Length: 133
Ligand code: HEC
Image 1 (cartoon, rainbow, N blue to C red):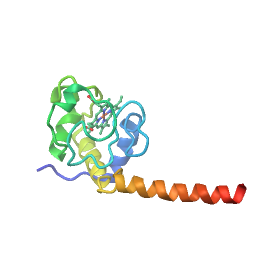
Image 2 (cartoon, rainbow, N blue to C red):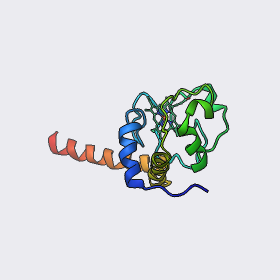
Image 3 (cartoon, rainbow, N blue to C red):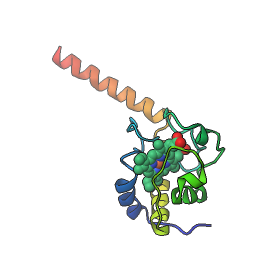
C-alpha cells in the first residue's frame, strides 16, 4: 500500500510538469492523452489520442501502484511508449497521484457529462440566435 499524498500540492506539480501535455478533460492538447478519471482505467484507452503500440498492448491498469512506478521512469515501466518525462521524488509522485485521484470521479470526461454539456450549449446557442436574428 502506498501512503496518501496531498492533492493540493499534487495539483501544483501537475500544472508545472504534466499539464503542457495532459489536460484532464475537454479537447486534448496535442502532446498527450487526457488524464481526468485515469485511476482504474486500462492504459491506452483514455481518449481519442493515438497511443503507441507499446502502451496499447501493455494490458496495464492505472492503479496507484502502477502510476507510481510508471512516473518514476516511463520508459522502464512500458518500454517503447511515447512518454519520456519522469518524476524522481517519491513525495511528488504520491502528490500527483492524490491529485489525479481527486480528479477521477466517474462523471469527469464521461459521455453523459459531455452529452449534458452539448445540450446546454445548444440551448444557449438557440437562445442567442432568437435574440439576435
Ligand atoms: C512532453 C509531454 C508529456 C509530459 C510533460 C507528460 N506526459 Fe504523460 N504522456 C505523454 C504521452 C505522449 C503519452 C502517451 C504515451 C504513448 O502513447 O505511448 C503519455 C501517457 C501518460 C499516461 C498513460 C495514459 C493512458 O491513457 O494510458 C499517464 C498516466 C501519464 N502520461 C501521466 C503523466 C503525468 C502524471 C505527467 C506529469 C508528471 C506526465 N504524464 C507528463 C506525454 C507527456
